[in-house]
Amino acid sequence: MKKKVLAILVGIALPVSVVSAQVQPDNQASASETKPPAKTNIEELRLKLNEDGSHYLKWTFLNQVWIRYNDSNPGTTVMGEPANETFDIGLRRTRIQFYGQLTDHVFFYTQFGQNNFNFLAGQNANNNGNRKFQVFFHDVLGEYKVWKDNEKLKLGGGLTIANGLSRFSQPSVGTIMTLDVPVFAQATVDQTDEFSRKLSIYARGQLGKFDYRLVLSDPFPVTSSGTALPSIGPNATFAQQGHHKQYQGFFMWNFFDKESNTTPYMTGAYLGKKKVFNLEAGFITQKNAMWVSNDGGVTTEYQNMKLWSAALFYDAPIDAEKGTALAAYAGYFNLDYGTHYLRYNGIMNPANGMATGPYYANSQGNAFPMFGTGQVLYAQIGYLLKKDLLGEGNGTLMPYASIMSGDYDRLNDRMNVWDIGVNWLVKGHTSKITLDYQNRPTYTSDGNKSGTKGQVLLQYQIYF
Image (cartoon, rainbow, N blue to C red; front, side):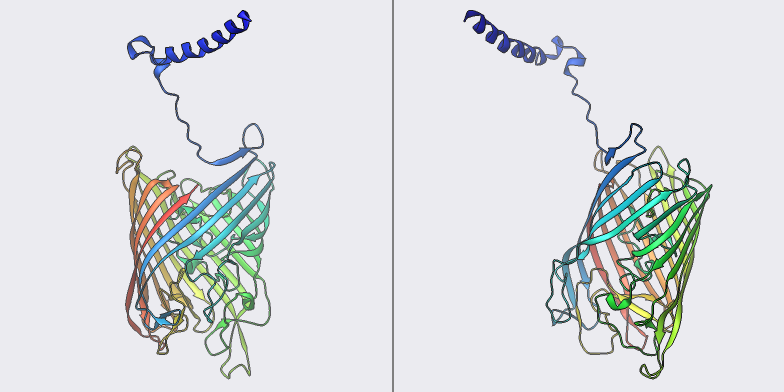
């Protein structure tokens, strides 16, 4: 019994003595005993499948919350009520990515989530609907790397955003510099694709400084877009009969650092982590994608869709020690959707109706003529200020400006949409707050400009 009591006392005394030694005053303890353990940050959710990490599984999460005030376009109604202005809160994007390199040759990529979820989510023209329908797979693809030791050729297929035309036709939305991507570059978005994704097979890779991708897509019929379809008329719309494959290509010359080739997505801003200067060009073409009729559909003319672009992209540090950087893009887009094609679109539109009047269809809320036959110039520029500008751990700022200038055949006046804003990069793209002001034009149905409207938007992004 005495031995048991003695053992218990020793068991209590030993940890007490250790704790006592740890809390001795600084003059009685060594520096190594008082120094707290170093904190380690987990930079990504990544599971190694082999010792060197070349085979892995990775997860990411993205959430973009929007708080917005909008000065409504003429004739706007919300739930049947006139609305000269709107205020809404929504989720622009909520996504989960899961992908990985399973062997030296085999890669897979999936993305699941939703977009444009505000108070009107699921609403339809009859003011009813189901707000719970919008979560879906954005991407599901498999890819084979032909040579394990280089990036010369990757063959893939599935539901994918691998596209032609431009870098903004396949953007990494978690790394964009401006508030949002120039959506006009996602040329057929939600018409003959699924939020810019198509069922495709492709070849992509890097040959030295030359980066390429060639894509054969099987587009969805416009009749499954889930929206009311326009009647055939003298202005081109997507054909509701017939089906033809789509051919796409994108090519890029990297003058300085090569861009990442892990997924088909293309980075928006490197925040000084790379020195990039690229010459870029791309195209999308599809036979008989559009149709017109001058006699109410008695006779029909099919027209090909032919889109191409050329651009320069620059993103590089200015002062590595201070952490400053400059990012810029300038592109020319030649867009032929057929005779006088014009499509209004409003991002996460806060309105769902139009009063009678001289207005284009679907021009309510914050919409503007985003897509059309004609030429578009698009440019953006941003400057990353010095690191820890707002104090250690509070990040820095990156002001930016962008302009989309469209000369569309169906409009009598040039269409200019410009944005000016600032990113508060609390922790790079991982935690980012963006304040943006956008100014857009309005038009009457005869193609004449009638004025301008604006919106102010605050976004908080989490991307990890």
